[in-house]
Every structure is written in C-alpha cells, then in structure tokens.
Length: 334
Image 1 (tube, rainbow, N blue to C red):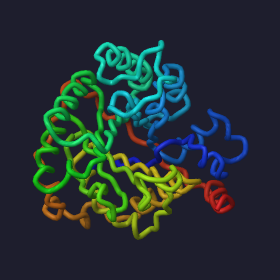
Image 2: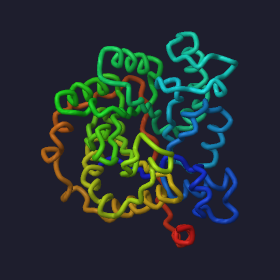
Image 3: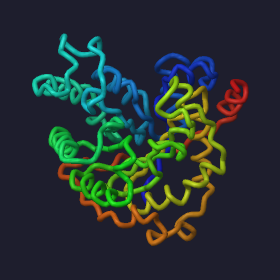
Image 4: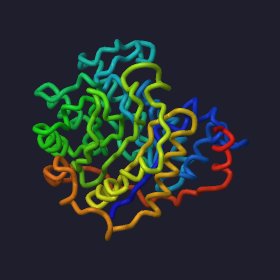
C-alpha cells in the first residue's frame, strides 16, 4: 500500500488567511507554512501558475517544512497554453506561448525557480492543468510530448479540463498517452450536472504517483466569481464516496496526493482534515475493492512503466497533528 498524503491547493489563499484558521503568533509567512506543515503532508503551490516561481521562495519553503513534506507546484500559465498577463513575464518578454524563443526562456526560469525543491527532495509533482479548449488530437499529443522532453526526470501530473479525454472510446488512449510519458493522471471531484463536467474516473498512469483534486460541487463551475466556482462544504458522506477509490489508487502507486481546491474560507483545510481522519479510520486492505471492482475505464488502462530518471519517492509524511486549537479556530471562524 502506497502513502496517502492529504492537503489543500494553497496555504496562502486570502480567504483562508482571513478565516481564523491560523492562530495568533503564526500568521506571518513563516508561521503559516510551519503551522500548515504540522497538520498535512502535501500542499499545492498555485501562485506559480500566476507568476514564475523564484529560487529564494522555494529554498525558504524547503527550510520551513519537515522531512517528508512535499510541494505540488502548478505549472506557469504560459506553459499550459493559458492566457498570461504581460506584467508577469520576465525581462519584458511577450506572453506568446507559440514563440519557441519565449518558451525556452520561460521554461528555463520555471526550472530554476523550483530547483531548490527538487534538490531538497520536496518536489511532489509539477501539475500541468490544461485549459478546457485543450482537447484530444495530434496537436495535443505533440504538446504533451514536448512537455515530457523538457521535464525529463521531473515528477509530473496532468489534469484535463475537457471531459472528452476520459469519455468512453477515448479514455484508454488517454491513459496510454500519459503512461508513455510517465505522467500521472489527475482524478477530479466536481459537480456532474454540467456539460463541461469531467467524470470522476481514477486511472493509474504512473507507478510513482496518483493525484486527486477536489474542486467542490458548485454548479457555477466555469462561470461567476472564484467564490462562486469553488464554494462548497464537503460532507462526510461525499468524502466517504472516495475512500475505496483512494485506497485502490494507493494499492497501485507509491504515493497518492489528495488535494482540496474548494478554497472559500477554511472549507478546504476542514475537508482535508476530515478526509485524513476518515482514511485513518477506514478499513485497510481487506475491505478495499479489488481492481476488478474499479470503473471500467480505469481497469482497461495499461500498467504504467517508470519514466527514465524519475527521482525516488520522498520520505514518509509526518503524522498530522489534529490539535484542539485548529478545531476551535475553525468553529470561531464559521
């Protein structure tokens, strides 16, 4: 059984900082990260999507977290074909993802920015979240191949935002494509009431890693404000639906990252704490459904092979500290 690390997508979200979850005396940059890392084993860095990460910050993050704690770093927007503001581009470069010269420089800056995490063994994965208009086809396959070539040796995770990638008739090819490049498929939890909803399949495409991201179940997905899109408080029954799936992933990979992106107030950290508790309390191997019980699309995917040069899995996670102070701060904020 592989490790299961639970955490949230960002520890610096403004709504979380303002929720009261961080106690007095631990509300500065260093205190927040240390407080978070005492409770969880993984966190997603979302700021790297909006601006290129810097070496200094990456070094500080590694210094301020315990052995075994890992960071999943979201790829910079230009590297996944998203619109990017000129103001965040380095050295006055144009925000043009089709320009090879621009891409070369941005890739180099991104790699340099996360290198301290790699050196410290704290890089859990680099997350490539592709936009809804990124659909299956020859151009997409070329793009993924080029990403794999530029990131050889990095642990990679890929989230598709267009549902066609995981629909019947395409899912097997999608899984094979990611496995060929050593990329871990990202499973998602989100509302299933929209045409744009990505199905909650759990394919395994890398022997090293699986990732599950919980986006909430708001029907305002893709529209409205950030708060509208991600506003959702997970109930225990909703989280319990995922327990056998997460356990099944852990049977087939070295590590599973379970990340909550319902970033309104303390909703994400609260859900993450609940999920960690449920996983601790859940039956172990005997009561976990076998692969024969997995969804058909996941079961049909080929066994993944390790990508060349992939670094070893980070050490064991610290035991989350579920202190009364964190619980009481959540109640006060609510």
